[in-house]
Image (cartoon, rainbow, N blue to C red; front, side, top):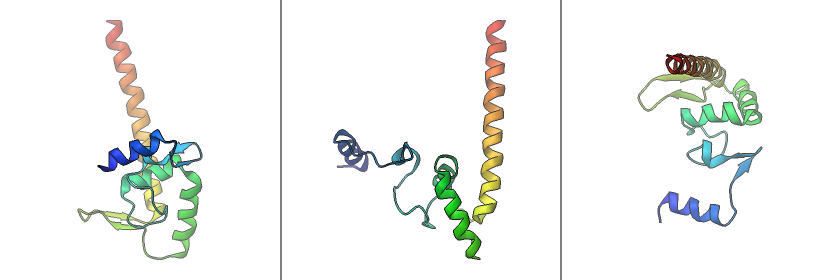
Length: 113
């Protein structure tokens, strides 16, 4: 069975791995330790967006540890510590929100023609 088959099997039997009303497998690649340094950037952003209580705990840990949560990506791009990531995620989310509103305005304008 594939990983997707196993997850579907569990869902069919009522196992959903939820936290604060969020299905964890909907936002995370792997449901594992929330503070694992192996969390990828996508998962860290999802924790920031959808599981703020865990993000706050990550910040508390980061404040005590000098080593960054994600020093580098697989491609060698520096990520930085949790506080740096938070700033980047906030900027990305603002850009995504303003971009989607512009797209909506553009679509409405084109439809009115």
